[in-house]
Length: 263
View 1 (tube, rainbow, N blue to C red):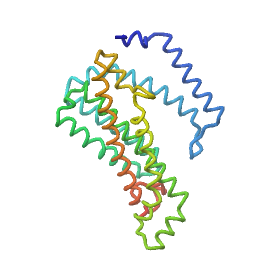
View 2: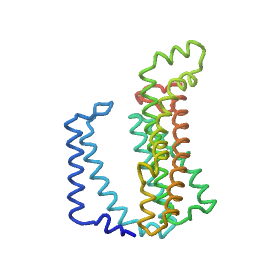
View 3: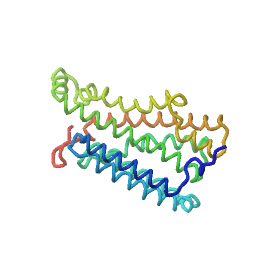
View 4: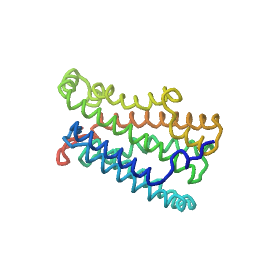
């Protein structure tokens, strides 16, 4: 078995390589003028994201041993993860006050899955197991919500005339928006589907590698990774479906905060 310290030693070399990779990513994004649909350059965002990741992981590494020892602290940490995910997803989808609706697809997707895992005993009520599993699922819900929300709203903006045409033919507001937005929002499932379909052939995801480094057998590592992938697919499907419904009903939108929301 290859020890984790041998695979990736935490030393000056690691720090230099990480800094070089981050600098390369920022440089390429700047030279290629990679920007979002709102004209914001990604170079600065990449730099900030990398630095934030370093600070946040350092803080979590220092606190995780303390947090997992007490149930109240464990619950607070999970709620913090959820709150950050909602804020991040919501603000990626819209700039107005409807961003908080992102809590519905993320919470509605993750909570039932975590409840089933706890009630069946597959995941023990212990921080050392609950925090990483919940974090993976919340992260999957965040990604699916962002992709589905942005794609659906972009499609509705681009094909607004088709929505009005469908309404003129007798479709209800919700039905007309669903017909236009559903295919685009459904594409949010593609990254998860591709990851699941190619696991073991193209990539060996983190759960599998982590279990092997921790001394688990390849069979157990494979079972854990399969469990994570299937649970993630369940979370992402629910998150996409709920996000699509919120947009179709006009609850999550990009109208200015001073405007009357779409009925």
